[in-house]
Image (cartoon, rainbow, N blue to C red; front, side):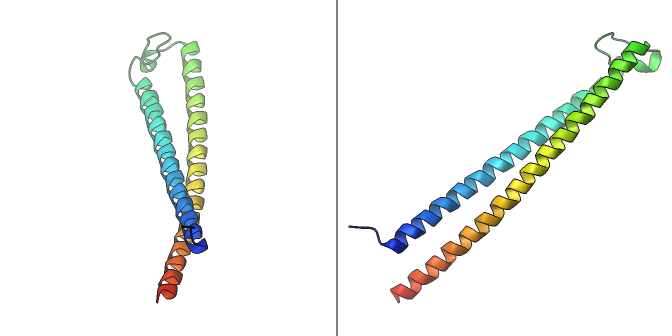
Length: 124
């Protein structure tokens, strides 16, 4: 038995809807992974600020660390800021992508609702 055109269209819309939902899920997982990575980086760098933190020399910053170590620490902080800025940009892009996908999902859901109404009218 051949598939009716409306059913084929409805199946295609449902398939697109499933794909959009999967894309949103993957984007959310990406955002969560970025957030976890950012938290780990922040934690790691936060730990490096406490006590005898300079792993290059093992000397406490608060007890007279050599100038070279302070420069290394400053460079590490600059790298940290750069990493955080990059992570924030990635998060913003992921949020924008999620928003776009969610808008597409709403449109696809409206199409499905419209098709279901047509099927009800035709079936009546």
